[in-house]
Each structure stands twice: as structure tokens, then as C-alpha cells.
Length: 460
Image (cartoon, rainbow, N blue to C red; front, side, top):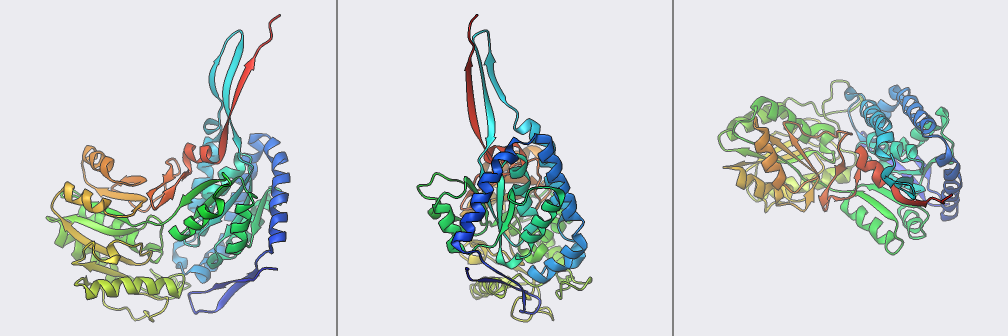
């Protein structure tokens, strides 16, 4: 038996849940069961797979009253926000709706002598390694389309959200998805790497840190296993002189602070045209000063603890270093800030790109704001990052947003929106944010492979 995995609640530092990690032999057996079951699953009619996945999502939604406080205890998100089922349903439902078009055969041509076409067929066994920050929504991004496309799935969830995979498996099994087709597995890092190296999986989808992504690539080296990697981010917002100031402040600050800043596409740096800079900062500070930091089980709490003390320690270190180098902090320490997981959300000005808080991923409730004079300066600063997930542009001019967006090194360009995942668009990144893409038609293409048919007809 492997070692014990423990979820430490950020609310009070207690052990909330623990599970024994599978031994390497037990993990191999789970992968083997998935491989055997996948053949029959892929042979089922597409409509049947769609219906079963939709029913699994509905069964998960029926658990929401239990899920919401459980999430608060595991990773600290306030109960007032109601969990993730709306996003899960939107994403799963969209992928179910587009699958026939996404996986339709590509006809190359047919005449009296030959028929040619390209099918898309499932990879086989897919490993989904999901993160803790949006544990249900990030998992469903791959789980739903992978199952619908005919793959079997092993879900390995983050230790911080240890019970999420169990709930998802329970919901899908209750809806009729075979247990061997969708398995929740408790794996430690070493066992995961060994399975990948042994080619136990045909595709691996990983959402997590840059370091974790490198470990996945190293484990897969030489195996030719396909990888989808969504890693770090340092997403910028750019407020142009013609922007709707009130909307820009409300959306960008929410994008920076929601979920205690622990969002893959959270806003971590903001560039504001000099004509709006002072007003933007004043309004942003007022928004954050009004937040209530506290127990996420309290309905009055706006912002809960970070998911782990060590995550909060990194954000504090970035803030302290920035202040030592001349940055200005605008938010006084809140009463609930205990120097541990509970961290005062912070707005910094007088920041530069020499500071880690404007360069390294923070993944916490802090945002730096800089003034810029024009688009050229804003584009240069937005691109001065090793990451590229999303960029949020604020202007009344859609053509200008397109011109600026074309020059920003990112996976998604938002205009007058931020911190959102549209399932109709490919969720993808560039640079150290990773490679591949989930959701949309392209998400299906990444979870399947092309198979070509050249069928020569016999003559009478």
C-alpha cells in the first residue's frame, strides 16, 4: 500500500480527509481494467454515451448541498458562492451538444472507384490529473468529452480536494457509467510517473503548476504518450482611455480576488491608461476594503483563507519583497489575517517588472497596478511574462481590441470581460502556460486521434 494522502483544511489546519494511495500494483490493475472496459464503452452508440454523461452530471448536481460546505472545508472557498455546478453543467452540456459535429467524419471524396474519409477515434485510456482550485469544473473539462468520445478515464485529483474524485465517480456510476470506465484513483506522484513511463495511458491531461507539467513531460519522455498541459499564469488586464471605468474596476478586481486569487485565469497585473489611472486605483481600493475576510462557512464572508498555509506564505513573500523595493500597499491588514492561510487581499502600486509580484505567478489575492501611456507600452508589458493564458482588454473599440489582441502572447483574448471560460472556445495557453487545449471542437480533437480510410471498390 502507498502512503496516506491527507487533506489539511485551511479553515483551522485540521486533517479534514485522508485516503491511502494505491500501490503500484493496484494502480496498474486499475489501468488494466480501464483498458479492457474501454473497448466495449467505445462500441456503444454515441447517443448512449452522451445520455449517460449528462445523467452523471445531473447526479453530481443533486449533491450540491453537500458539495458546497465540503469545498469550503477542503480549499476555503466561501459557501456564499454556491459551488461549481453551474459551470460544470454549462461545460458538460456544451460538449455533449457539439460532439456530433466535432467528431463527424471528414469526407475527402468518393467516386466509382474509391471512397476516402477521416474518422476521429478515441485514444483509449485517458488520465485526468485535476487541480484543487476549481476541482469540479477543471475536471469536467476533460472527463465529460473524454467519456463521450469513447475513452475510459482515470481521474487523479489533488490531495487538497481529496473527496472530489470520489463524488464525481459516485455520481457517474449511479447514472450508469460502468465503474471500470470511469475510475477515481488515489495516486502519489511517484506512482503516477511510473504509470506514465510504463505507457499505462494513451493520453494525459494535466492542470497544475509548471513544475508539475515538467514532471509529466519527463515521465512521458520516449513513450509518445499525448499530453495536454494547462500550467501557470500571470494574466494581465489593460484598461484603455475609452474604457467603461466602473465595469473595468468591478470585473478586473473580482478577477484578481475571487477564490482568494486562486484562479488559473485570475488577473494578476493591471495596466491602466494614465488618464484613468488615479480613478481606477481609488475605486479598486474601495472595492477591496469592503471585503470581509473570514471563515468560508460564514455566509457573510466574501473572501476565505487560501487553500494552504504555504500558498499564503508565497504571496506574503512576494508582497513583502515588493514593498521593500518601493511598492505601495493600499489595503490595511484585515482583522482575520492570522499570518497563516487567512491573508489580507492586497492592491499594490508603484510596482515594476523587476518585482516578483509582477513577474512570478502569485495565485493569491494580490494585484499590481501600473500606469501606461499608450497601446505600445501596454503590449510590451503584457508580453513581458513567461506565461500566456488570457488577457483582458477594456475599450469601446472592438477593432482596436482585435489589433491589440493580435499582438498579445496569450491563449485567449477577452474584451470587456475577464476570468471566464467559454466552453465554445478552446481553453489553451502558450509559453510556460503549457500546450494543447480543452473544450470546444478542438478539445475533442485533442482527446481523439485521426484515422484515415482509403476504400477501393471492386469492379463488376
